Length: 219
Ligand code: PGA
Image 1 (tube, rainbow, N blue to C red):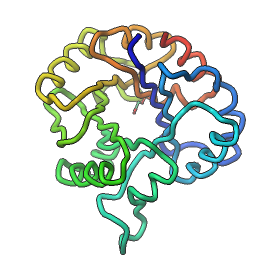
Image 2: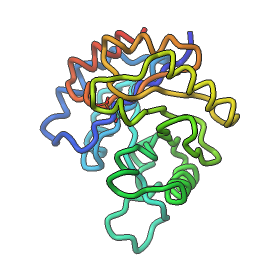
Image 3: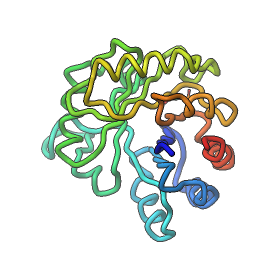
C-alpha cells in the first residue's frame, strides 16, 4: 500500500479554544500509511505540540511559512530552528503567499534552503507544471489557482498528467500531492492516481468531523 500524505492547511483560522476537541476527534484516523500533517497558524503550534505528545497522537505538525533568514534581526520572522522545535514540515510557495505577499522564486529558494538546513521537509506548492521547483525539494503539492477555495477541483486526469510531467522534469521529487477544493467526496479519485501521493486540504480541514470523514475516505 502506498504511503499517503494528508495535509490540513488551516490558513489564518482558529484560536486556542478551538483545538482540544479538534485534535481528539480524529486521532484514530491517522496511521503509519496515512501521514496526517496539521498546519495551524504559528500561534497554535506550541499548544498542539503539547496535545499531540501528551495524548500520543499519530499526526505531524507543519508550519505555513518560514523566514528566508537564520536567527537575527528580522522583526516578525519565525526561523527554521524555531519551527523545528514543534514541526517536521513547512508549506512553502503557496499561491496565497505568492499573490498577497509578493513571494517569488528567489525568496522561495531561500526559504527552502532554511527549511532543509533546519531539518524540516518543505511541502512546496506549484501552480502548474512549469512552476520552478528549487533544488532539494522532494515533496510538492500541485495546486491550480482556479481550484483553491472555489469548489472547482482539477480533474484527476489533469492532476495525474501534471504530476507525471513534474516528476520527469525534476528527478529529486519523490511525492506529489494534489490541492484545491479537495473534499471527502472527491479525495479517493485523487489519491488512487498512480503519481499522486496525497492531498493538501484547506477549507475542508477546518471542521474536525469533516476532516475525520475525509481522512477515512482516503483509503
Ligand atoms: P481549499 O484550499 O482546499 O480550500 O481549496 C487548498 C489550499 O489552499 O491549500
